[in-house]
Length: 134
Picture 1 (cartoon, rainbow, N blue to C red):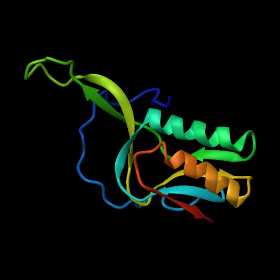
Picture 2 (tube, rainbow, N blue to C red):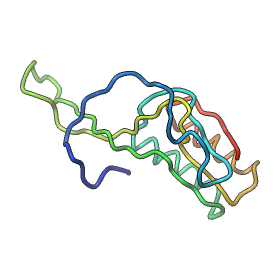
Picture 3 (cartoon, helix red, strand yellow):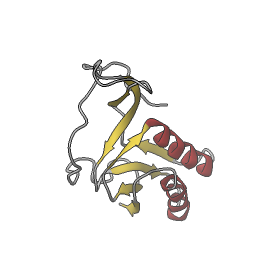
């Protein structure tokens, strides 16, 4: 699964809200893409599950680009731990997805095949998505 090799800070604040995306809004590499319609955190496990769904359907045909990367650490404290004692240890990493962000891109296949592959991937993700083409 995806996780950053090195981070400047071990733990991070939660952050507030999910404004509309200003970056990663257009198709840059492929011909077809999966675009998010809402803002949410997508875990590295969900990204990997979606990637596997796409590659399994394409069967060594076409090229895939993953436009999001889980670089936000999420911490958890142990169960039955009292108040205080500081912030918990890093549990997993998430990618912050905003409405309008391109998540995956595909090229080198027909539109029908790309649409089905991205549809299968969208079922693995917690965000509402839309299929777009260049």
